[in-house]
Length: 308
Ligand code: 3HC
Image 1 (cartoon, rainbow, N blue to C red):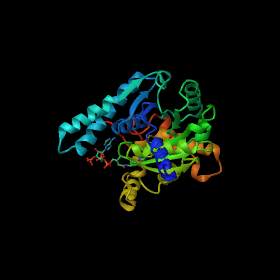
Image 2: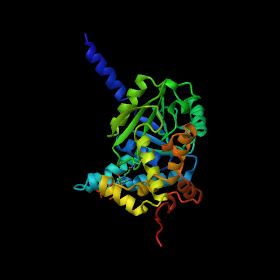
Image 3: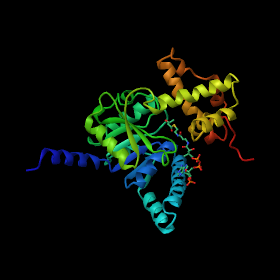
C-alpha cells in the first residue's frame, strides 16, 4: 500500500505536469515574451491576436530574442543553438481566432490591453467553449483578477500570472490567488511558472500585486521630481542607477515599459482610491501619452529613440 506521503507526492507531480499546452491571447511585447519562454521550455503554444501584422511582428521578435539567448547559452556549440531556436519556433503557432484554439489547451493566458471590459468579454466568450479542465489566467499589471474572472463560470479555475518585461530576461513571475481561485489551480500556476525556469512569488489579489505596487509609485514620484525641477531626467536616471544599483533609471524604465501602460495603471488606481497621493496622475505623463510619445515602442517618450 502506498503511503499517504507518496500519494500526496504523486498528486503534486500530476499537477506539476498539468499545463503543457496553452494559448496566449495578445501578441504584444508581453504576450510574445510569455509565448517564447513557454515554447523554449517544451510547451506547445498558440499566440492569438486580432491583428495578423501583430502576429508577424511577434514571431519576428521571438526569433530575434531566441538568437540573443542562444548566442549565450550555446556559445560553444552554435549548431545546438540553431536546433534550440528551430525546435522552440516549431512549438509556436499563431491564430487570429482564439475560439478555434482553446479546444484542447490546459491554459488560456491573456496579455491584451489593460481594459477590464475587454478582458471580461474575452473570457466570457472563451468560457463557453473551452474544456472544463482549462485554467484561465490574466497577465494584468493592475486590475483585480477577481473582476476579470467575474463573467465566467470557472472562477475556481482562474488566477493571475504576472510577468515582467523583457520576459526572457526577468526571472520573476507573480502568481495571484484571487478570492475564488482553487488551491489546485493556484498550485498548477505556481508549477507552470517554475517549469518556465522562473522564480515564483505568491500574491494576493491586491492592486499591483507586489512589484508594481512598489515600482509604479516610484516611477511616478520620479516624474513629479522632474516636473518640480528638482533634477534633470538624465541626473535622476544616473542617480538611481549608480546610487541604488537599479539596471535602468526611472525615465529609461518608463520608456521601456511604455508610458501608456504606466498611465493606465495609475489612472485605474486613482479612480479606485482618489485620495491616495501615491496614485495621483502626472500631468506630464498624460501629456506625453496624448502626444503619442509612448516610449521606445513609438520612437519617443522621455527620450528619443529615432535614428536620424
Ligand atoms: N531577449 C533576449 N535577451 C535579451 C533581451 C531580450 N528581449 N533583452 C536583453 N537581453 C540580453 C542581451 O542579449 C544582453 O546579453 P549579454 O549581456 O550576454 O550581451 C543582456 O540581456 C543585457 O542586455 P543589454 O546589454 O541590451 O542591456 P542591459 O544590460 O541594460 O539589460 C535589461 C537590459 C535586462 C532590460 C536591464 O536593463 C533590466 O533588467 N532593466 C530593468 C527591467 C525591468 O525593471 N523590468 C520590469 C518592468 S515592470 C513590468 O514589466 C511589469 C509590467 O506590468 C509593467
